[in-house]
Length: 395
Ligand code: CTP
Image (cartoon, rainbow, N blue to C red; front, side, top):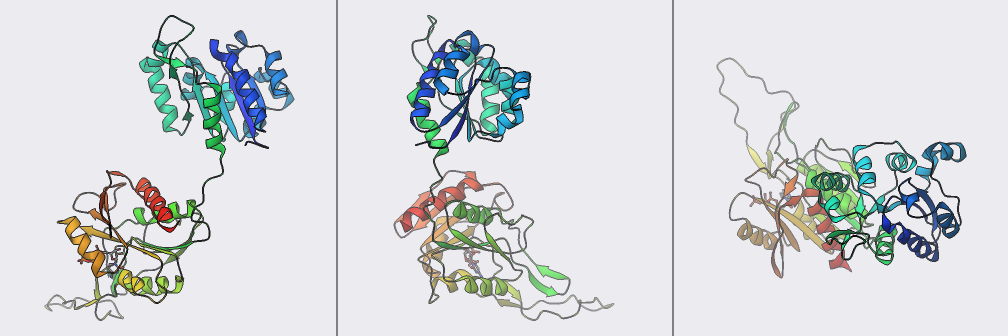
């Protein structure tokens, strides 16, 4: 249902414009308020009187008249969703290039609402490289599409270009406006991310190449699914993810303390690249080189294993997930790591390439049931998929 939802419907020039009237009928039946904007081309196929009658609202068709009545910026800000149906090749071209020479194109440039486009045009126009490029530009900017369909057209030509059916457009509108699913609402997730810095003296430390991108993306994804997230972050150059409680730490021991303090949790995802060793005796003053003296020898001590510690904690989260950064025999090492650290899943990745610091990741998920190979994808997508899997496991 779309009760109380405000839809701004732009009707541009296509012989399919008459179908916009049926779309308005369905939208209003579902409880939405529809404000129609008619382009000059659209007005060749459907009258402003018909649109006004069926929306029950004044129809906006002139930039300067709209300016006097309500202002195009207010018109652009009012809707929950802008729907362009039918969308002509010309309007898509204007929108892709940021032109604003009539009311419809000005609203498209000024709105911050999501935009859904239902193209309708001759198949040759749809398939023209110019239209392909414009459609791709808009899609890359987050514009949603429905159709066009292939099928009988007004012209004796077949191929894609036919406006999607109003019922089909409705399904997409309802999906776009549905409240986001929050399957992890009420759950607490603990996430570690980034490297640790192990001090040598007040000015020097041992570090690694972890950027924190994957761990931060996981914290963001879990929060998007409704979880309350505590992110324990080592030193990274990333901003704190919004909607997440971030605790900043430097060393592995600080990270362990912060993780323990964050319990109880339902989920733990340990994505940090924790230093395995620290310098056994941190110098309280800067190490100085004395003339003729030998280079200092650093004696290392083993750091606590945070993942293993959380997995064996009396407040053990129900689902404990570790990462395995490997440079060889990835799956074999990861399977052994899962058992050794008593965690439920291991996300294994081969870090011999440009994963560390990069934006994409190729991972394998190792569970008690076996190994699942995921294709290479952006770290944000790995995070969303992992969060989805976590939600399924806890459902
Ligand atoms: N980890 C941890 N505390 C440590 C070391 C690692 O919590 N002191 C966690 C990491 O966050 C990751 C997992 O353990 O989730 C595996 O990290 P990785 O560096 O791949 O494994 P190591 O424990 O270092 O094992 P190995 O030296 O055999 O690679």
